[in-house]
Length: 238
Ligand code: UDP
Image 1 (cartoon, rainbow, N blue to C red):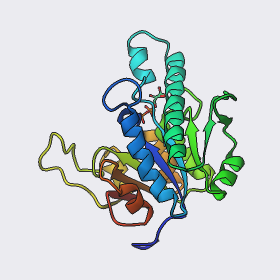
Image 2: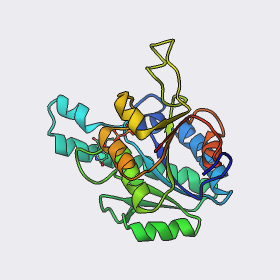
Image 3: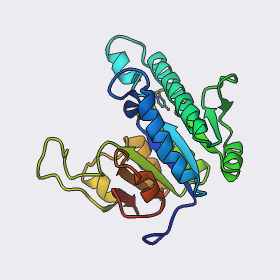
């Protein structure tokens, strides 16, 4: 894929923390503005699947440090991602975008179960598919769900939407000399110990040649730019 050549099918990973607007729960204004950005892109005909994190509710590891059983805490956290999925579904549909939520934990009243071939069919029909409940398994992350779903349903890239511009040599908030990479290989990320996604998610992408584009969601229009193949953020590929 050269510069300017758009993608046909992508997986967008959104962090949960963003959805909370800095506190517990969802901030409807934030979800609305994310939905507007997504709707603009989907209208151009690109097929989009979405995985949302749950950091605005709970993280299993944090709850377990405070005395909860890790497995149960992780399940609670996965349920949080379903709430985020429903919130995004609502705002997307208000923008006129048809959507389906598929949950890795079955709950028929609120979401379809995760059925990969059905998800692909939805995408072909122009529906946005939102994957809730992560992988459905404790000890995993929604980054890993994003990598796995992208591979299984044939997405060309994982778009990692962040609150920073890309992957840096160091934390740009604390190190004024931090430099952003425009392009980097999976191997270089590993060798330099850079943080792009958690290790399980990252190794899945590396082993299966899945490119990851890390970009800033807070810059209006960036989802469209990433989908269109414009050089924004950091492209991690082999
Ligand atoms: N989680 C899990 N298995 C999964 C996905 C998520 O157990 O497959 C739990 C885990 O506790 C995790 C939390 O859900 O910390 C929220 O997901 P994540 O931390 O990936 O959210 P984000 O940081 O993207 O908001």
